[in-house]
Structures are given as C-alpha cells and as structure tokens.
Length: 620
Image (tube, rainbow, N blue to C red; front, side, top):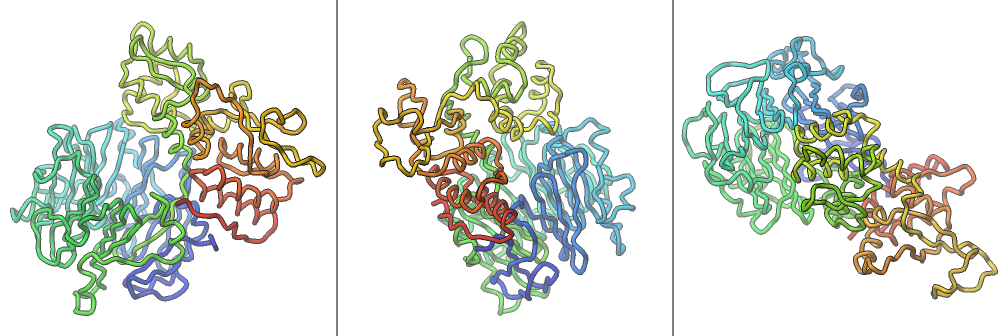
C-alpha cells in the first residue's frame, strides 16, 4: 500500500491543481497530489479556490488554483495550536497564545481584509504570514479562535470574548449596529467555548454563568435556532433548547446551522435545502436520518455538510453545484451515507484517526497520524500506576512519578514540595492543573499555571526546549531511575531450544534492557494488560521477551517508546530491522502503530531508495 498520499477530495468544480484527474461527481473521491501527507494535522478550507494544510509541528502549506504551492513556517520556534478559516483569511493560533494571519487583499478584496486585526491590513497578501500585535499589546493570551464570513472571534485569558470584522446583521454580538470593527472589541466575560463557520453570518458561544448557549447575527430562515424572530440579532440571544455543557460542537453554513451534543446526536435548523431536514426549520430539531448514530466530527462549507460517526461512517448532504438545485441532486439534500475510498478501509477500526473538512466547493478526507505520546501519558496519569512518591499538603497528597516530574521541571521533588506547599501552599485544583501540563501538556487554566511556574521560579510560557517530547527523550538516558528489565535471548545457533522456567534464564543466555515501568504501561497495550493483571505487591521487575527478535531491534523499539523516532546505525541491516520491528510492534500492541509504521517506511526508503509495504495489521 502506498503512503505517498492519503488525502482525498471532491468538489463541484475541477481542481486540477491538487488532483490527478477531473472529479466532478459526488460522492466519488479523488486522490490528491499533496505530498508527505502522513504528517498532516489539519486541513482548513477558505474560499472556493484555496486551502491551508497544517503539518507537524509548525509547518504550513497553502494551495491555490493555478498558483504554485506556498510553504510557511512560524518563526522563533512557535508551535501551532490550531488554524481556522474565514473566506479570504486564515488565523493561526500558537501554544504561546499568539495569533498570526494569512490573508489576501488582492483582486479588489480589501473589503475582506477588514476582518483582520492588522493596522496595515491593506498591505496583506497570501505571500507571508503576518503577526497580529493587538493581543500582545493588550496583554491578552488567546486560548481559542473561530471565524465566520468576514468576522473573527477570540477567547482570551480564559473567559474573555473579543470580536472583530464585519458587524452586519449583528454577527459580532456587541449590541449596536455598525459596519465593521477592524480591531478586536470586547464582547463579554465568563465565556467558555465559541463556535462559528467559515461561511457563517452568525456566531454561537457558551457561558459558565447559568451554563447557557447564546447566538447572535443573521437569523434568516431561523438558522440561529431561536424561532422566526427578527432576521438580525444584535444582542446575543439564549438558545433555550440546550445547556452549554451538553454541546460538543456547532458549525454554520451560509443559511443553516448544525449542532452535535455530547451524546453524538445531530440537530439542525435553517434553510430547507441545506439543513438536512428537507423542510424549513426555525429551532434545532434532531435529524431523523441520523437517529441512532453517534456523530463525532462535523464539517460545514457554503453549501455542504459532512458528519462522521464513531463507527467511521460518513454522511453528507447539500452537495449541489453553484447553480440552484435541480431534480438531479435532490437526493443529496438529506443525510446520505457516502462510501469511503478503499484506502480508508484499513483504518475503519482505528478511533479518532480519519478526519473530514469542507469549504466553499471542496470536501476533504484525510488521516491524522498523530503522535500519541501525550495520549499515552494521559492514560498513565489517570491510572496512577507505579507512582513512587506524593506531592501536596497533608490530607491532599497526590501520587506522582518522581522521575517524570523531575525531568519536566528540572527540579527535585523536595524542591517542588517546598516551593508549592510551604508557607502558602497552593490548593488541590491548582496542583492538578500543574500535573496535567507535566503529564500530557494540557493547559486548562493559564493563569493558575503561570502562578505555579512563578512559585517554582520557572519561565512561563515554557521554551521550545522544554517540551513533553524532549523531556521524555531525556528520560531515556536516565538509567538510574529505570526500574524494570526486558530479558532478550542472545542469538546462538548451538543453543538448545529455550526453556521457559526462570532457572534457565542464566547469565550469558539473555541480555537485559532497562526501562521505566510506567513508560511500558503508557506505551504498550501488552504491558498495560500484564501490569493490570499482576499484583504490584509481587514486585515484578523483569519479563522475558517472546518475540524472538534481535537485541538490536528491541533496543530500537524501546528507544522509540521514549523518543518517537527510529534511529538506525550504518552497521545495521535496515530491511532486517524493519521486518523484525513490524512483528514486534504488533506483539507489544503499540497505540501509535500507524505513526511508527511511517517512521519505519521513511527509514527504509532512505537506506534502500525503495518503498516497501510492511504488511501491518491495522488496530482492531
């Protein structure tokens, strides 16, 4: 199987600039010519003739009709957190809370630029990424960004909502009529989540106060879900059908809105041609065609909607061309199951890997070969398995892994205990907030985390050299804290068939590979099951490897557990190593099997000049 491309697209126009052939018939998918797609994190569609591809960790590629592909990389080691799109604009949010813009004012598009909070927006083109200085000047940390049609919304400092751009129909929710707000203006506080859509003339947000869902902007055809009231809602209006905590996601097209709750139920309202009901609806109504299906992803464009279920079933509707719908395409006005390309059938059992995206005239299917190190360590954090010390105040101690804490902070446990729980101890909530960053890089409360860093006399935000991946890679070198050994049989042609009894594990027949027990628990499904079965009081500190693979191969695999990279030396046969690892990966049940497979394929191609199919079995 080829991994040169795993992005498929379909659309109502001919997009020869990213496809190998014409593709005008939905729901047939065409394989794109986007390169190195195993590194894709997200695809975002803007207007009808361009889209942006985010590649890990901070690289971007821009595709535009009849134009050469452009590449961008954020400066100073900035790491991308998310990218969103409007019509002629993209906003890039970094983990440091900064915002960058990629926009175009050429071809008389200056009107679109009014949505971009740049003092010199009229000078912007798609040629380069521009830094938005507004938030730094106002000392605002941006947590999340969404965009509508010619409008931007920013959630700052945890719960403060700002908005900029076009205010027609009241879509900024600032309570007054007006054409545009080129610089972000304050809307309100106590906001927990924000939603829009790249072609939407409206906006939704959730507040912590009373757990309410609000909507504002254009209500034509009832697309705000608040009934047939005024077509413009200048002041945010409560959507009374839902509590805010029930909402998973909301996305609007130009004349409809789709909502998915945390149970996976899909609701919609608005113009009958595209709301999925086939009749005009002015309040959110459950879609009958998707009843009993648990939706997990939603993608809306100008005239199209895609919904992906937890079983990786894809449904779509509204895929008409630029002209008014005809009898020929009426069957797509209701949710219709869309067949996935054959490439994706290998991943149907893999949860949270297939991704969807929609724009004005394009829809995408692609795979997220994500780095599961944070997800694996999240499992470890929740299990509290093999914790060897505690931090906190008396009665509120929290078990932790000493070596992990010390490598992440570069401080000893005693130093952390004294600084955080000395004269003015931090509370348990702040401790948990700190530990989430330690284990899996989650920042749930920026202000409290920064306070914790200040108490520890650490620099906030952390530098690019103080990342989870780099700290775990350094932990690999710390042999003193390793508390477990994998016994690997030494190759010997004259050696008799091994006996499984422990008394036969004699020195000289086996080599020991030291490792941290908690790393094995986090990274390997086999070890996780074994450790859950064995009582910790039995103090098991070694296990025999039964894969019958070489020591070199298993050492490479164990190092991968820490570093997420494959390293081969010049004296190692790459084909032999890769063949052995392909079996060992399956045996040890790695969560990021697909990510490792791509690492192996790249190493093998580099060493031999050829591509191979490793024949992995996909996770069930």
